[in-house]
Image 1 (cartoon, one colour):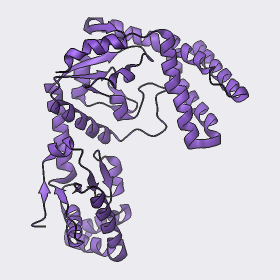
Image 2 (cartoon, rainbow, N blue to C red):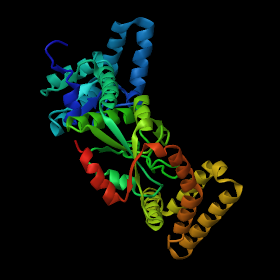
Image 3 (cartoon, rainbow, N blue to C red):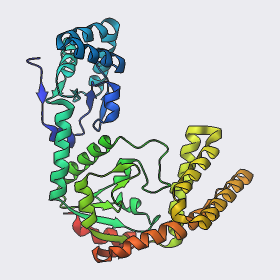
Length: 365
């Protein structure tokens, strides 16, 4: 609709973490959206479905007419109110639909008639999404990458969070990157992950970094796969290896996979948390059964069950440290050492967390 403000300054949106209102239906939003976007749809899933049928059968004009009939009266006022509250809370909020077409234009016009003003993304979701894909490609071609490696539990993520020019792929993917690394909350949609990665790349390059540091993740994290341009870059990057004493690795792994996991499960499942976590851990052990081999699989399950029984008897979770130690020595370490040996020529530096942090300081440019 003429006269209402639009913007295609996608770079500014990324650099400012601009809040966004996504007026697409929830089913569309679930498939993929942008960081800092909230779904306040013009039409819900059922309304969108009915309008889509009308469009196929009778054309655009009749579909629009039906849409106005479905979203009218109190329903219309409720949706305008939701948009208005969002704008009041975040005055720089922008709005988009799929292509920047009728849905966002109608929403923007209704908001304007209510006395508020909001900028619409020109080209909508599709244009912004294409921009982020292109920027990911451009960024990875421009930047030099360094991969932070090390055995499981060495504290790579802890160190990564201290480095100014690092991107935490596990954080973006909501997964710790191993068979036991699933978070209690689900991973984001692949498109959400890719969009968040693009934001991180654009923002880091804006800060002037020529080198970016990533954890050694292979081709993806959990069920999410990385864009090919990132996978290719990481597979050729120089390696910096974090070396951590075995006992410290046990403590770090125990803290993440047992202590913190218990807290999260208990918060969500209350009295049933232990049995649910127990079942999830057995599922994880089953996933690695083939690689462990029959005998080691039986041993690791037995150690785990002994720890569960101890926890039920006296509330102590210390028994899980033996389980963690066995998993590290019998499963994770041999697997990682084999991979590291194959990539020995790429190793740039080895050291403790403090030594690596000091060494990588020269790459803050």
